Image (cartoon, rainbow, N blue to C red):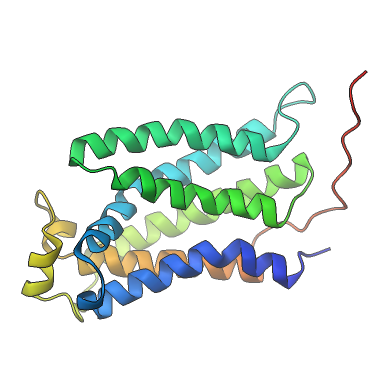
Length: 213
C-alpha cells in the first residue's frame, strides 16, 4: 500500500522549494537577497546535521515496546538538540541564520511525519530509508561538485561580492559549487519522496493508541 499522491506532494514540498531556491540563486543571483545567498551556501554546510539526525531518529524508533511510542515527539526532541548545534554555528559565523536554516531542513522531516502518519515500525523504516538516501546523495554530490567543472551561470565577481562569504576555500571561492549541489541534492530528495524510490510502503493503517490504565 503506497502513500497517496497528495501526501507525497506535501511531504516533498520543502525539498522542492529548496531545490528551486538553489537553482534561482545559481542562475540569477541578482534576484536573490545577499543574506539569502549566504544562507543557501551555509545550508549545505549544516545539512549534514540533518542527515545525522535522521539516523538517530530511526535508531530511536527501533527501540523496543518500552521505548518511544510515537515518531513526531521524538523528531521534535531531536530537532531541539540539533538546533543547539545550529546555534553554535550561528555564534561562529556571527549570524542566527543557521538556526533558521536547520529549522527549515528538519521541519521537512516533521512535515513528512504529519502529512503521512504511520505506525512506529513503519516510520522507523521510512526514516532509515530517508537517512540512507540523504547520506548517499550528500556524499556523492559533494564529491562530484568538488571535482567536476561546474558552470558559473550567474555567479560572477559581482555576485560573489554581494554574497560576501567569510573565510576561504573551494566553496567560498566558487560558490556555484554548493549552489549546484543544493539544487540537485534537494531536487533528487524530492524525487525520492514523490516516487517513493527505495522507501518502504506502509504495511497497514496506523494502530490507535489505547489509553493506559
